[in-house]
Picture 1 (cartoon, rainbow over the protein chains, first blue to last red):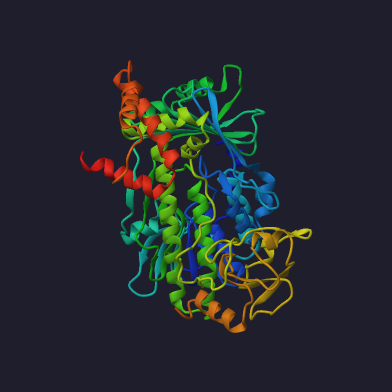
Picture 2: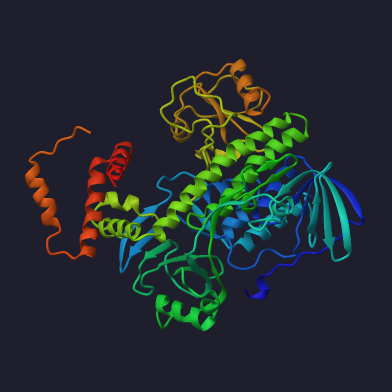
Length: 515
Length: 59
């Protein structure tokens, strides 16, 4: 990667060989930074340690889903990310030399954020670091976790350029990625499936006027037998992903001459481009059995890993942070019992399973493991041009959306009849709200009662929306309908005509005070 | 299963005809296409999964 884009941060030592901190987040990637900002905004002191002193380098996450953007917005950091990124809603799928399928991920107008914004992970991290520093997160760069003693108080042995130090923490939040040092030090199993197909990822600098869409090819003329993906990023960088097969030699495939030859075939002989970053990789779909181990909680790739098809890695990590931050903040403030944290596993565990299932299915479609599997894949592709049903079978990645915590113990089941709108466990739906948006008025520092039309004020912050109009339609609301919204903007309960006692009971359940 | 096929001999003949003149690979391809087309016609996921399990029982 061109070095002018690497932002370097300042190492500062703790100034003591032994220190005590309430919450230590390990890993200053997108997940750790999101979590630290969210906790800090809720009034919790947070220390973030990272072994490096730069943002990430190389080809990492690029696609930030609508739900992640909404979370970033809640944290006050969406604007620079959207402004710098590339907005897209449309994907096209090609088979050989023809388009077989086109999809729009945001069929409905009237949402603050698009289906996706593409932005290199290092730019997202820059924006998050800036925000984290502005809200007072203590960030300790060049602090490498070398040991973790969990016999009593969690105690982190840290190595820095100035020597070793020790941090005692009440809580350790592991956001240190697929190769998590915390996970390794605790000797936890990371079980799942390893895929054998190798892929080439090339980030390429070129000036091209291709539309800002996701283009995916099966068996294209320029790369027979494989798949290809083209995606635009900021700064005229394009992500190209080529399936190389199981027998590819990574060392050979990484050679610039070899990569340039493959890209020439794809981009045409006249296209000027420059390699920014090249890697050859395989991927895994796996997870920890449990994400919480007493005072240590795992988030993002440290907890679960998926294939890249569907943009479910980074985006699910952001949702992990969104889910844990408010719960931990309430527990630390003594406003909820510690068992509220069990719901992190109960909600994010099924979410991880769903992400793994989806990304495994995509991977099996893109890289068929048997002849029969390939034949069905090719049959679906050959039918897709003329038959709409076949298009629904074509799986080039089922793209990340907000997880629905359908079976969560924090939900209060509907007692009234609803025929639409977000049910308990779903993320609240955005809608235009006069000249502003509905979602930023919900959640954040505490619970919100979203009430349509005049009515009862809740025991929590109450927000009123008109009983007719777009928001009411999206929430299947009429006059008096109310939704209890959690700090992470997920729905806890809803009523046609709420009672104070009903709201109190739902609030007690959603904060783990009653089962 | 107690399903019946309308005019069974005609349907059976058409199924055999579908493969006439095709080599094994083309024959498998056309079978895969037919299975997907019939699956779309049936539509119901639970029924399809039941039919898939039934197909596998004697194999």
